[in-house]
Image 1 (cartoon, rainbow, N blue to C red):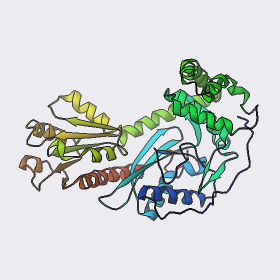
Image 2: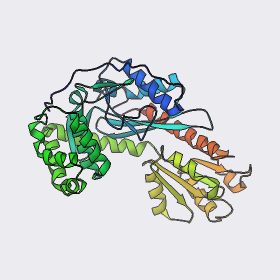
Image 3: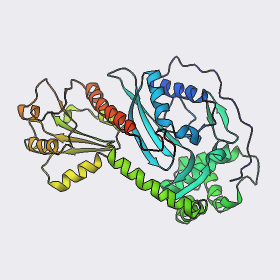
Image 4: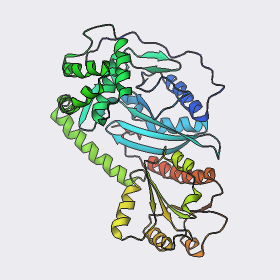
Length: 386
């Protein structure tokens, strides 16, 4: 992809960190850690408020040489700043995310860092190479961002994949368009995007959405053209290995909650959504079908609470079966009292006295799972090459 670009810049602008929250401080420290590697990298989008404001996960494009040793790199950084690695998510070919916990006990905050070495989506691989993503990068505070031409195309492609064009996305396209001075900046292979980009620049959300089906088909076709037959076969094989690894390593957790459901506040549950994607409460008996679904959910970043308090008498029987099957991870109970039947399950038990202590117990178990998964290796980021 031949884009014209601006000169590189150095991200060394002094910054005032006196008022940073723990998670913002962690992100700022990570930017400094990245800068010390003497490698070309960028934060791809949603960067305007960083590190003070972190609207969602942070997307990084990094070179393959760093990606292949990313597990050790993230672990070393976490140790240096006193953070904990609580999740590793292998999203796709040369795509991986890590969730770090920072801050003191009782006041944990979480940050998700996403890494890739080229922009691609499911069904449309090899869309923009890393070298194009970082060419002409611009300095902002103590990090780097892509030039507007690249961010504009990147933003449009993500919206086509996610099928979620909104007024906010169109407004961003308009802002980026105003930053581009050359009229012929869009490569020939992406000229089919011009009508959509122009409509987005006019903030015509209805037209952009109407064009999505045709645009998505063209984007997928473009992605396939960028890979040879051999590369497509290798990508399919890699995805099979990745799925096997995702089934091997649990990114979710099943908790026996020997307390009222209301004992966990909504704020705590919302905080845990930064670590787990799905939240399920089980309050009724089930057969092998239910247990199979829960086992799969534990490998798909699910947070499962089996209600086994006094208000749910059926919960004990469910808890016993789950423990026998090896699906239960721990018991959370309140008021210092744990039912004798549940105590006999042999599971780790935590008497939580607040939302903060419950979060700490859940985070501790998940961090141990992640440490085990990283130690097993066998992934693209394990440091053993491709």
